Amino acid sequence: MKLRISWIVCLLLVAGFFVSPAPAVFVKGDTGPISDGVYVVALNRPVALSPGTAEAPGPELTTLSPALTWKAVTGAEDYSVYVSNYPYGSANIVWSRQGVTGTSVTIPNGILVHGEKYRWNLQAHAGTRWSSVSNTLYFQTPPFRAPVAISPGSAQAPGTRISTLTPTLTWSASIGADNYTLAVSRYPYGSANIIWNPQGITGTSITVPAGILAKGEKYRWNLQARAGSRWSPVSNTLYFQGPDPGSLPQVTTGSAGSVASTTARLEGTLVSTGGLPCTVWFEYWTGSASATATARVTLSAPGSFTQDLKGLSPATTYQVRAVAENARGKVVGSTVSFTTAPQAYLEGIDVSVYQRAIDWTKVAAAGKSFALIRSTYGDVRIDSTFPANIRGAYAAGIRAGPYHCKGFGLTSTTTDTAVIADAKSEAAYFLSVAGSYIQDGYLRPVLDVEQADAQAMGSAKLNLWITTWISEVRAQKQVEPFIYTSQSVAQSYLNAETRPYARWIARWGSTSPSVDWDFWQYSSTGKVDGVQGTGAGYVDLDRFRGDLARLDAEFVI
Image 1 (cartoon, rainbow, N blue to C red):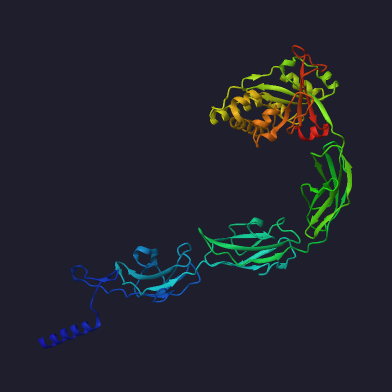
Image 2 (cartoon, rainbow, N blue to C red; image 1 turned 90 degrees about the vertical axis):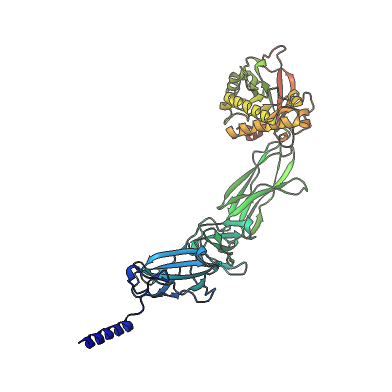
């Protein structure tokens, strides 16, 4: 009986030795005993399948969001996956995912970067048990390649002719691109002639909106892809031409109208556009002189067009012709002539409180066409007769406008900050008093700059003050003030920036100013019916260099 039990025990022990493998515990790749001498079976190591190879740097992928796959481990509950970039290792892990079930996981967008080297591996997990780390696979991401422009167009200029002004531009996608930026330029091509530049385009096509392209024009286009803050190289460039350009335009020259001593209105008619947008203008000249071109205007349909000429010479014969041009070429209308009238002057006055109450009806009857009326002095004093004067002049049909007399007190040693502050203060005061008369029907506002003040301040401070005052008034009223001053101040103190504003020049006597002028104060001892004045009853006399049409066109708001 004892022998039988011993053999049975021996047989059971021998059988157990071959059936059960040596017990071990795997914890993240390590083995060890469990307390109380109990052992469990370790998880097998998973096998990484794709993407990648066992040797670095591995194959180049065609996506930035590949699916990682591996062979399942018997008894595994889930897996932990690790991806690192070059130089590889735990310090360079760019993505990890724990608790993955199944045998694959896709790396989300935004993790991998173009043109980098990566490797990955994983571990299986069940309860508190971990397998050892799997084999490691290496792969590379594709470089950020340029998209490929597909259509419309060809690789050589001028390219194919399209049949629509709203073509759809198409291209192949760049791997990993978030969006695209596209540029269309017109001949002569280049960044200076880009006419359409949409950005943030998703997808691989976009339609050019109406109003961008024109018939008969030459174009080229290309694009770039963007991923985050990174840009791909620029794509290939395609060239194309707009639809059939049509024919030459037709234009006729009309006779000049509103001809005065220094102004005229040129008239023309665009008879046909030739089926294309046209630009039209005039060319004019005297004698054998070269032609001068006026500003160009774009017309999309037949019709009349005009151009007002200013600054012509009095009593002079001019030749003029209308011109039209489209993508097919340029044509000119017949040449016509007109003769400007002899030099015309308008007579006017400038007044202040010293002229006391004025009968403006009598002033108008005396042949005075305009009046410049003092409103303010410095930033503390209003001319008490200003409201009555400007209303009375306007009611009598006289073109009237306010002028502000610059205050004294600043010198060449005054700081720039103080100069600017003073100019702004005076501008604000002037606008608070005269602002309601700086509107349609009144003359543009004037700044009176006296010689003594110019001498005290010097050129630099004076010009800083003037430009500040003018800027303030312009910004508030959207009109351009001009300057009253003497000929000597205009010549000696105003600089290149302020001199063009000096349009009202004081030079008493029979000789007109030798500097450019539009208004000329030629006397300080004038006598005009309706003006009493103080003392001898004098009033300043002024002359405008032109006729009423020019005054209205250039100086009446």
